[in-house]
Structures are given as C-alpha cells and as structure tokens.
Image (cartoon, rainbow, N blue to C red; front, side):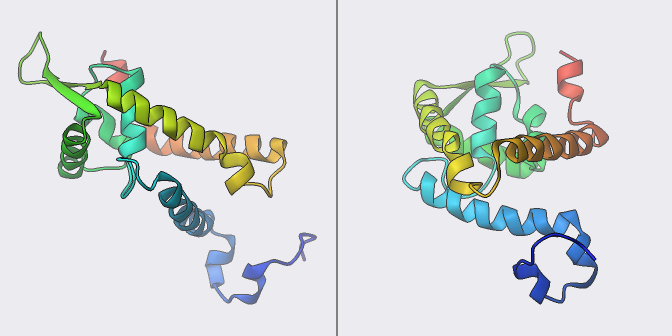
Length: 167
C-alpha cells in the first residue's frame, strides 16, 4: 500500500502501465504539447515538433548541420530536411555551404529567428507557474534533472553526441 494521495489514475485499470514511466511521459507530453501550441499560436514555431529546439541549437551552435541536430529534434533525415526547409522558408534560418567542403550545408539563425526565440523564451519562462504549478521549486528542479538524465542516456545510447566529439 502506498501513502500517496489518490488521484485520477486510481480509477483507471491500466494494468502494467500504472507503474510505467513511459505511460506518464506520453500523457504529460500530450497535455503540455496542447498547452504550448495555444501559447505558440501565431508564431512560426507553432504546429509540429522540433522547430524550437532546432532554432536554439542553431543559435548556440552556428554552422551546425541538419544531420547533426536531428537526434536532438527527434527526427529522421527526411523529416529533419522538411523541418529545416520550413524554418528557412519562414525566414528563421539561413543555409550556407561550408567553406571547407561545399557539400556540407551549415545552418545559421536569422534576425527574425532571434526575435522568435525571444518570444519563445518569454513563454517558456512562465512554464513553471503556468504548466507545473503543482510542483514546488525543489520538485521542479528534481523533475528536470531526472528527465534530463533519462534523455541524455537515450541520446548517448544512440550516438547523438558524435557531432560534438568530432568538431
């Protein structure tokens, strides 16, 4: 028997899912994604996933390529190409040939991309009080740390950091 308070999941019969982290991550992702879509409405990063993280990665790693970003955006190569094309068509990214090897296409943030990231920062800055009000500051920090640890392990397992090591 647990000493936690009863919640809405106690009434469900979800078998082994009741103790599966993946189940709760999926439920949480659905609800948080819906809320973020409402907040991003009118911004060119609304609709779909990977745009915001791609913009931040390019902002902090100018000259990175789409293939180097894709594991962090959770995209396969064709989906990443479509995402980058969309960000370029929206005027948020610029693509230039690598001066050392013309086949490699480097990505750079545009001034419009920087403006959008400022708006995203303001929205994300309110996340703790608007989306995760039920967590104390300590619980919030602990949750971020645990999710970051899990995410890092998956990315490392799938060689997501190879681009950084080879630079």
